[in-house]
Length: 67
Image 1 (cartoon, rainbow, N blue to C red):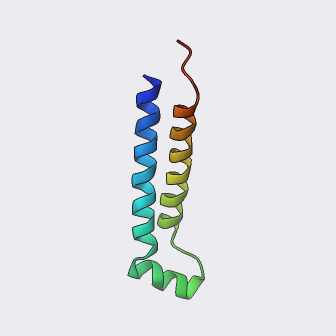
Image 2: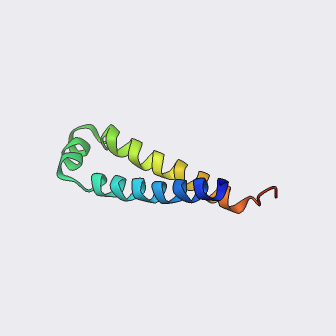
């Protein structure tokens, strides 16, 4: 069961990273970066959440089960 959760976290993290990358290169994010010097909060949360979920999934798959 934990392998399935780890795999779901890994896939979900990759999806979040994909959408974070798409958001990073959007027109609204370019405008926000022009005026503020940093990307939008949505972009930051998507990328950060993707990194955390991907790492959690990888760690969960790397740790052997206790069977």
